[in-house]
Image (cartoon, rainbow, N blue to C red; front, top):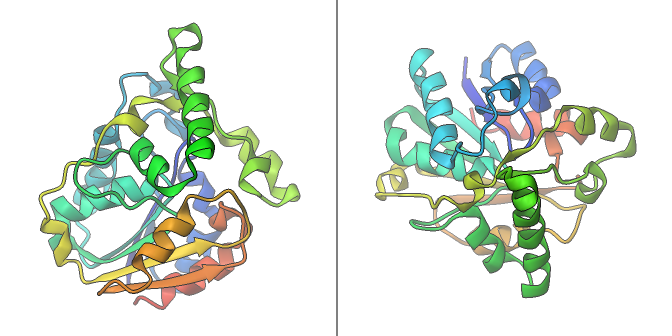
Length: 242
């Protein structure tokens, strides 16, 4: 029996892994889908003061409370920021890191920093202006969700995603990852590229790690929300890591 921890991206919640989690459980494994403070069923805790550190502690708390070891941890999109810091702090508990169309920071990099690295300058600026403009509106400090259509999500699944996604603190995108290098001891790392939508910043990371030691890169013909549009295929990829 394997232990899977599935970490969602911005504006989402643990709900987005519903179908993938069910398939992994049916295969006899333990699956946890923690929701970050301020989104999903924890939206009542929403605040502009929530940071990346808050979300790292959320998932660390799940791993600690459930006393998990040999964890296969999968982070989607913004969730890549979270799992990178978790690996730095809890490397002894993690068997494999899976970056699902996700950001992979180095020490001192924020998600917004990575956008400028991974996209053409004009496209990156459009994203940054959108995030910051929404946060400045009404001095809320909160970013509105990106529409499901922009992520290429299948039309039949868009209503569910649109209903469930909620605003998230801009501070989560602006706080840098603080890494000691301890996470480098996790030897198994996988990058799964969603290969059916653009402009995608994640092609940059797929290319960057395609020949890096300890990494494997695979592609799925999916929208950005792989766990929503291709849950069975994602479960199959995760089961390969047992």
